[in-house]
Amino acid sequence: MILTCYRRISGRYANGSHGYSLQRRRGSGPFRKRRPYAVIIADMQMPGMNGIEFLRRAMDKAPDSVRLMLTGNADQKTAMDAVNQGHVFSFLTKPCPAESLERALDNALRQYELIRAEKELLEETLNGSIKVLTEILAIVDPEAFGYAQRLRQEVRAVADWFGVPRAWEFELGAMLSQIGTVVIPPIVLSRSRARQNLTVMEKEMLASIPESGANLIANIPRMAPVAEIVRYQRKNFDGTGFPSDSVSGSDIPMGSRILRVISDLLAVEATRKTRAESFGQLKTCIGLYDPKVLEAVASCFDLYLGSEGSEQRAFFSRNCALDMCSRETL
Image 1 (cartoon, rainbow, N blue to C red):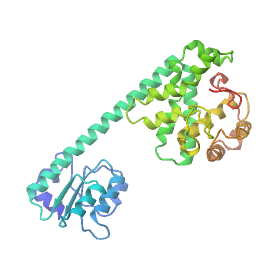
Image 2 (image 1 turned 180 degrees about the horizontal axis):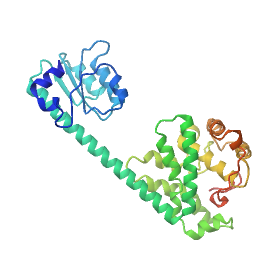
Image 3 (image 1 turned 135 degrees about the vertical axis):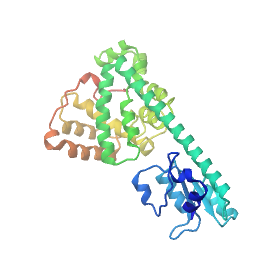
């Protein structure tokens, strides 16, 4: 009925001359095809599922689509449920005049274009900002940049094994985990990597690297979760370590807990130990790591390294990291 009405009142939508076409769909099948729908119109009374439940599910599958509700039941509760649960853009009652239907569709299409434009702008800003930060790190501290690349590969493997949602945040957290080094004087970084004695002030500088990096990232739109991963990358599972707050256990971001295990694993490997030996050393450090992450890392590495790979030694520069069980704060 809706499709027939649209074709009658406005041929420009039906023939797709504005880049859109009209289609009738039943059930959740169309959402699995991963094609964008600018506007979704549902009737309140439908077989098997009411319009509110359908639009609620549609919001989960196609969050950018603009949702309209058409119903002959105009009571206040129906309208409130449609707005609160289905997040509808417009609520239309039957019988609906052709002009009102056309106007609602026009407004919905304009709203969709605004949503897409804002999303594209945010994505461009996000991608551009990340590109700038990584290029700065590569120029200012190539060694830290190389180490971050290695962290990114390992963290991505563990995140994929976990099957966590928004795994891109974990990957970015690893990639930008070293960005705080750009605010540290090069002489201090050189002295630290050469394992020379450091002053109290120099140690405090190095301990502030996660906080400095998190503050830089937090200014980028949609990057607050990544900033928190970077901020808590040195936090111990028992709540000790940096930053000095009450956050502990599962309240520490999962990305931070994975990053902590991976960075320490690579640090021990840098002392020319096998991966199995390095992992065994990490397991002796009580309170530092999430036991579930340790178990996942062990399983993940067995899967993608295999018995032969688990005996390989990691010869990347030992200047990139220190033995985590013996160092004080960094």
